[in-house]
Each structure stands twice: as structure tokens, then as C-alpha cells.
Length: 289
View 1 (spheres, rainbow, N blue to C red):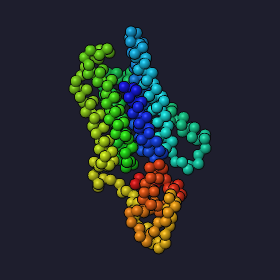
View 2: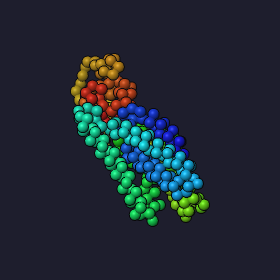
View 3: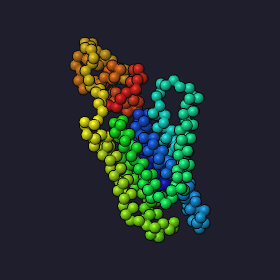
View 4: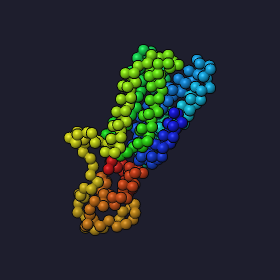
């Protein structure tokens, strides 16, 4: 299962390997999954110590979980954090190092705090697991707020949804599990329905738009890249991306205007925004298209 999750993470990282692509991914969603994997790593180590005959098996599983959260997911967290920071902020290394230290300290603080909470509220472990398995919700909310286009690969959504169900379904669904936890068919069905609903919403956002289920009246006004210029221009300009001429006298949907009044060919600017969400001319941050 952990090996499959590594492959899915690699596929997702390739899917969002640009600054614009990484910025669309919710850092809370990845952080929540990293915390889950760190807990599973500790759980496997503890189980291996308690059940000596299965120590090698549990230690191997713990190692793979450690690789998932400490290498791949933490690396992805860092990539998302860097992508969401303004590239022209002019901040020095000390400021960046301080922010990075705060990011890591917050992650490990939540990790340790979660251990204490689960220890104190171990009688409510099933409810805590439901909260932990709401990891797709931050991405759903981020998609609606940012109007992000296809931030997650469908294989990643489906694969992570299925693989993360394996352990709780075994523990709470198998009557003869080694942890001797009382099985609950109703809880397992509820967990599958809960995380399945989240995955279904993400897939709907992927194929039909991030705001497809939100009423139009509730949506904020979206910037129109095909708006008319604030002033009439009767001469041609050059697109700084392809260096070809833009004839403003015959302006159609082949031309896009940024909020900073710079003009580009539609195809050129759309390909540019797939890499960076900033104006090619003045480096001003661009709104979603």
C-alpha cells in the first residue's frame, strides 16, 4: 500500500511540477496526509514491538511510511510553500529561513499535539479518525476559493482514497484483527461513504469546473481577460511572449488583457499561466483565468 502511495505521489508531483500547478494544491491537504502517515509509521513500530513474531513485517511497513511522509510528502509541502510565496517579494534568506522554520515547527507541533489528544480521547478514536479522513475537504474549499483548474490528477484522487481505506477497514471491519478491536460494519460503511463523497466532489471539480456545484449568485465576480481596453488603441502591439504582432483593430478572443493593461495572445498567456501566475511584462500577480 505504501509503495502504491509513493507512485501516486510521484504522479501527482509530475502533474503539478510548475509553480502555478503547485500553488493550486492545498498545503493543508498534503500536510494532513503527511501527519496521518507519520501516525501510521509510529503505529507500525509500536505494533512490531508488541508482537515480536511480526516485528520484521511491521518494521518494513513503518519504514515505507517513514519514506512517504518524511521524503515525498515533506518535499511536496516545501514545493507548495515555495510556489505560494511571491517570487518578487525581495525578502532575504533570513526571512525565508524563519518562515520555513515556522512551517516545520507548526507541522511537528500539530503532530505531537495530535498524539496527546488521541491519548486523552482514546475512547473517541473513531470520531477522531473521521476528522483525519476529511483530508480532501481543504482541497475542495481551495478549489472553490481560488477557482483552480485541475490541481490534482484523477489517479491520485482515486488511488489515495482507496489505499488510505485499507488500514481502518481492516482494524474496524475485520472481526479477527490482531489489535482485537471490535468490528463495526456500520462505521466502515460510513467512513467509505464519507471519503468517497469527498473524492466524488473532487472529480466533479476536475471534469466540470471547481465551482460547478456552487450557485452563480454566490460566486465572486471573476476577472475577464477578454474585456475591452479602458482606452481605444488604433495601433498594433507585440506579444512579449511570442514577439508576434497583436492587431488591436481586429481584436477578438485571440487576445487577452491582464489587470495591469498588458496584452498577449490568448494561447501564449494561457500557456504562461500554466507555469507562472504573474504578468510576463511587469511580474504582477494574475487572477485565475
